[in-house]
Structure formats: structure tokens, C-alpha cells
Length: 199
Image (cartoon, rainbow, N blue to C red; front, side):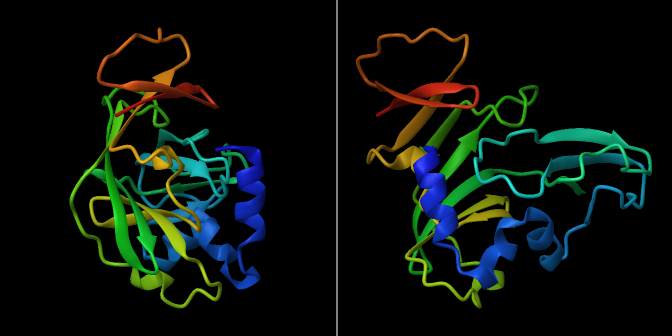
């Protein structure tokens, strides 16, 4: 995402709605098992650790950690939460109606930021009840789900499908850009990504 867009996105948020951008606050309101850095996990095991707020996206610094009890080693701006399994969906809601649904595919052993592809699918999602009382007037709201579990919200559209495309295949640093008769390469440098193949 371009930094000008980040600037515009942040400035468009109603002050009473900033809690939505805190993944810790969102996860807590949704009743998920989670806590801030410094708050111990209830049972030793694997947890996902993420920045509490990450306006730049791309899964920056997100990772799975085995935590025995203490979380004092985490960065103060991070939080931990239970891990959800299932299909990852990104849904654009237009005036609270699902307008665009894309599904992500990734390799199991890849880092959390690295996706193989995103593909538009014909599917409807119900608008999350937890967002019914937001104060701002947002034409578009993008929500990320794992299975039926809401994990992240943005008051904007999905930037990877701004081209009217049906598929977005990321190209990562170190990968060679190949000629393809069926796909078009779009440069979109961000974090470890250099662009996309789109249809």
C-alpha cells in the first residue's frame, strides 16, 4: 500500500473507531484468547504473535511462537492470540454488503506474510456484528477472516484488487519475473513483495 493511502486511511477514521485497528482490542471484543505483551498465556503452546496495530499491512512481524508462560520477551507493541485454522478470506463490504470476496492460498512452511495467490470467488459473507455500531460513515470496509473468525478490519477496499482483476499472484524479492501470455505483471513494491501477476 502506498504511504499516501495509509495517510488518507488513518485520517478518515472516526476517533471513536480507532479500537477497530487495534487487533488486540478487536480480538478481545470478539472473545478470542489473547493478551498484550507482558500478560502470560494460560497454557504453554503455540500462539500467533502480531503487532497490535499494523497500518502498513503485509503481515509484518507476524509469526507463530511456542510460549511456555511469560510473554515479557515480546515487543511492547505486540500481542499474542490463539491460532485459528481454516481458509483465509479477504472481504470488501460496500455499505455493509459483501461486494468482493477473495481467498488466499499459501504454502504451509512459508512465513506468514508470504502468499502464493489471491483469487476472487463467488461467495457472500455476513457483515460482522461487532462493527454494527462504528461511528464513522465508511463506504467500504475490508475484513479478513480465517474460516468464520474475523481477525482484522480496515476502513478501505482491498488494494490488491484495484485493477479490476480476478487473480493476484504476488511476486517476491528474489523471484524472477516471467513472461506469461495469460497474466500481466504489475509492479507494486511493498515490504518483501515486488509486484503481482494479474489476469
